[in-house]
Length: 273
Image 1 (tube, helix red, strand yellow):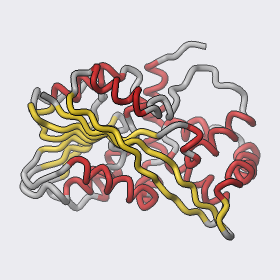
Image 2 (cartoon, one colour; image 1 turned 90 degrees about the vertical axis):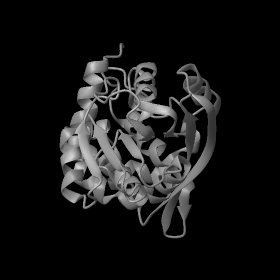
Image 3 (cartoon, helix red, strand yellow; image 1 turned 180 degrees about the vertical axis):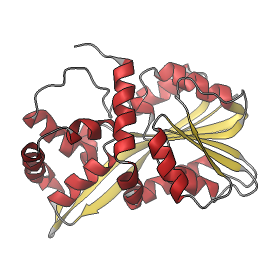
């Protein structure tokens, strides 16, 4: 089974376009993580900020509130997700621009900060995407990333994926793992190899509570990105079976009458020299 980068991008674009409104409405689930990213970025008034893999601009909106007299550009390959963000945004200093992270259309040294929340692992050509981020950063500028930790430590995503693997036939084309940068050492080496300096990687624990396993399953579908396009094509009976199965996978997360999924996310901060 081979990997098709163009097919992967089409699936990601279709998935995020499909779930754009639901993704924006589920923003509260990641509020703590977004706050940690904003804090790590050390945003200041007057800065120019680029938010890559922005979807409907949830993280970008938070950044815009911290950069008065500056501006934030929310960028993604999913143009309908950006349109959803534009519809919801009230911040005058928030702009939206469709772009492929591996082929950014911005000039050199245009931004003080580059943010990328839970997106790096889905870029087919990571070295090229990182080179583009470094190119558009000003000297001394800061790039901040979040990626999922190891699969065993990220039940928020892993529980649903385990059910999908067990019930559905193997995919016809290879998919990028959301956990591909779950190792702190690998993430550090990858950023250093791209020319970034002063790389610091630390763990953030993302805690999400759900009243039921079905609420978890719906949340996964609301945030699933590229997987959402494939799930949307499944028969309702198969989707229902998947929803039933997640209760088994979520059992270790049971607390009282609901579930609490505590997942490790790696936050990386790096500078352009």
